[in-house]
Image (cartoon, rainbow, N blue to C red; front, top):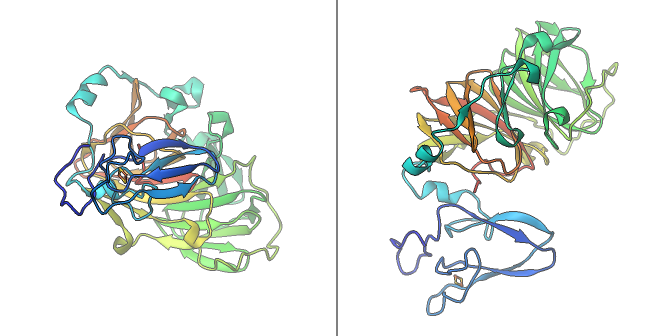
Length: 359
Ligand code: FES
């Protein structure tokens, strides 16, 4: 237990990070709510004499989950990221961690690997090369993350659109979560038109057809899930718009941003606009180096502004605006911001959830 500065009627903060637990379908578990158990995250009876009682739950499936250890979650027994706000600063790399990683090899972009700097576990940093793009009408696109890159579920495609109207496109079996990096225009999904500009997120459900009209040249990052062999180019709409989710566009709204100590993020596209597989967010990191951590999701990150260094166990690679980062599920990593003005990024990950949850 790391913190005893709590009131007697408050749970003890057993840890400032969630605990990874392997659950078995149908099995009953007792999650510790008091924080006093020595068998975190589960109850060992240490709540005796307090008003706390363990929370019993039955695992719905066999899976690894992150259970709350700070005991401040609003979604018990699961971590909801509440631990991030219990300290004044986001957890940064410790002096020991920095020393231990001081020998991490600086990896250069490798032309033989499509220009990627390949880090541990198949993670990579890539500066997209427009020369590799394919073209149709006003559109150019290139795959930046896919099965051939080691990703299991996510695809990431960089789309640029010249001024004008692009052809209709669709992915029959894959959802598309779009992020407008620059430029402005209109994206029409079936018969619904959405005006979009920089830092707008937009959800297009599998089977829906859409086209974009660029008022000025646009750059878009499209996260695709499940991975697709490429878009189809139908002649027009087919009326398949899912009217259960009529609003698909989400813009940056500082009132909706989640503050995590000295950094913030805002969820853009999630299940509120119909995206059940992918969560898209935008975030800002101050001059700092995050503590080494892992997520239970596969992630694509796009650097929007600022400079930094991506660290994995034994490797590191610099990142600059326009670069993308791929991280496999459970890949240990730390993103360092080396820019006094901060680093702004967009992330998209599968399965959907909260970017504030790591272990
Ligand atoms: S030991 Fe914490 S609820 Fe039982």
